[in-house]
Image 1 (cartoon, rainbow over the protein chains, first blue to last red):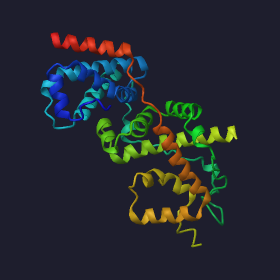
Image 2 (image 1 turned 90 degrees about the vertical axis):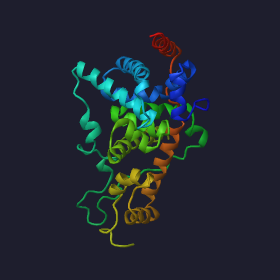
Image 3 (image 1 turned 60 degrees about the vertical axis):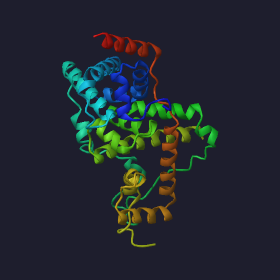
Image 4 (image 1 turned 120 degrees about the horizontal axis):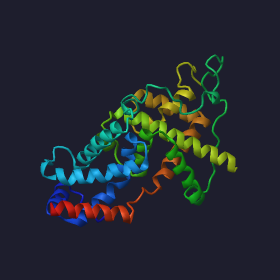
Amino acid sequence: MATLLRDDAQVVRALRERDEAAFAALAREYHASLLRVAQIYVSSRAVAEEVVQETWIGVLNGLERFEGRSSLKTWIFRILTNIAKTRAQREGRTLPFSALQRPGAVPEAAVEPDRFRPPDDTAWPGHWSSPPTEWNAPEERLLGGEVRGVVEQAIEGVPPAQRAVISLRDVEGWPAEDVCNALSVSETNQRVLLHRARSKVRRALEDYFSEAA
Amino acid sequence: MTNPVEQLSCQELVELVTDYLEGVLPEDERARFEEHLAICDGCHTYVDQMRTTLRVTGELKAEALTPEAETALRRAFRDWMAS
């Protein structure tokens, strides 16, 4: 990342000047996130890879038309989304509008309801009946390969829209605004997707630490 | 302890954690959230675990472009240059 030209105008100029190294650096930087976003729309990993490849060709071909009205990043992801949607239609897949545009339509609890006292509890309705217990994991274990594996697996297990959001936000460290732009979702919807994904990853870690204890 | 009816329940709190960590809770809700945290061990632990989750997730490496895929892209780039 350090070697990358951070400024959009600089990157665009380099590409227009046919700078292959600048192109490769850009492709490396966005590779994982483009794949994640493509996978919201298309069913297989292989097709998602093709969509990413096509996106770069679309970026190169569209370069002369890029006017900098959006960021380069947003522009690239818009090209990706269009290509991915076309592919999804060809595959006969229903587009995941609901997953992105109405993520809160189907309620999903961050924590199973049976871990709380029932609503008719006379003293403390909705308070923990089975509270979480501290993980007490030493730092080296927490950041070790096994725990990382648990988190990776949990992320793979969440629905694609949630997976894309948690990957961009928490793995790649994008600001919320960039994720909203790349996915064309509102801030609220971005947050619902993030909340659900994070809650599931926490839950996976909780299961792991309680089994391991 | 104040009247529990006016307080956030734990079940409500866990659904607000992301809004809280994102800093988008309105001032009064944020105050209710923090009041609850201060007296509830379970929720305190929960929020702690969520922060730990974010930290561990942040340590993951994003998937890298494979050398084969990079070669294919560079080839596409040269085709584009030649066109």
